[in-house]
Length: 186
Image 1: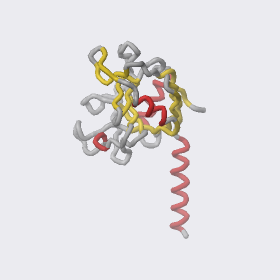
Image 2: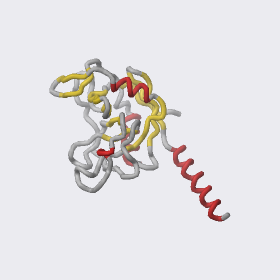
Image 3: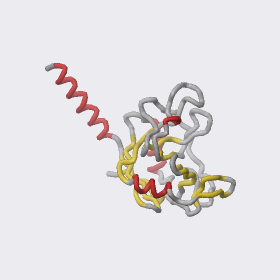
Image 4: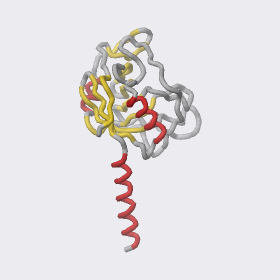
């Protein structure tokens, strides 16, 4: 009886934590995407993303890198591929138990583990090779900090656009896919 009560309380507690996670709505030129942010699993990353959200940093930027069957990436460039100046880089919170599965959002970064700033990507498939496996630069992985809870069809539509090379960047949509706004859902 005591074990059952403890199990029930733990289950209720984990549901309550998930309910406390913030939700944002990303309005794009292809439609709206609703995203639950994992404040319970990646608090530094979520705080960082919300700082950009609350300052309207993402508004008017584009999905500048689209690779169908892999991911769509945005949060850094305007339609002319001019990079917007971000805040300082954050600590990488990649964890093995928070995998880069279809529909999850993760922070883009360079080969430096703690180099993520504003750019993020949405996984189109389970990308196991992006998961945290060890403490090396290659094995550290990419920090997952949220998941699409509505609008994955919009993400899939973004993935289907034609891409090419522009200003020296590859996999750039030939038609700009704009992030009109990102706002907290009340």
